[in-house]
Image (cartoon, rainbow, N blue to C red; front, side, top):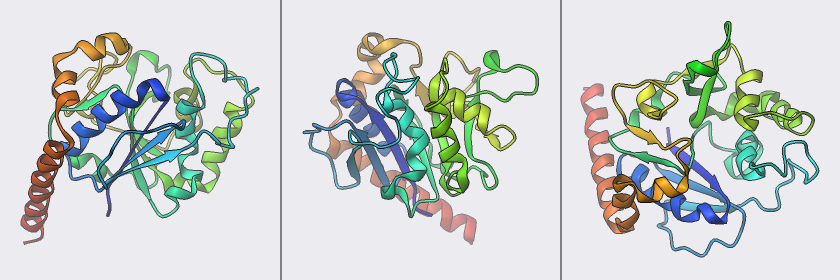
Length: 248
């Protein structure tokens, strides 16, 4: 199984998006990282990264009920990943917010048992009520095969017809109930999610100004792509040795 990851962001988030991607590449055996942008992306990237300009996206018209708020189609487009031709041959993909940093080996996240589920994400207990499993989709493992069976279209339709507080996160949680796999919290270690260990730190609700001053973020911002790729090669070798040991 190839391991894919995806980030999306407006122009002001291109820098943080690269920083986040470098940390993931260095701490996992991911095969390819996709960057969904609103155009005008002029940064150099290694071959394992691919930019997809979604500024001409067809799913969320300008007059929609969730446009014109602090959110844009760049956030909502996560609901349409399963419908994008670029991902037609991919069964599962790890979606991450740009304010995330992989801090430890996190290759196992792609192995979560999400067959029969639309996605895996970590529980946000303070937003749950009754039997609702409400999750934070800042780090989400999407089962694209399941979502292509009408659920992605349903989510897009809902976003174009009703207003939501947390936009695509609300839609994914409400419409996918009963088929959400609860991701271990160390893959989305943030203020909203109790955790004792972290593999991916999520700077949720802290803002870009605080993000940019954090020493952990600075470490990965100044790391060169060559250094990140060297660490990635080590992660791939460890994963290969681990597989060989399991198969022996």
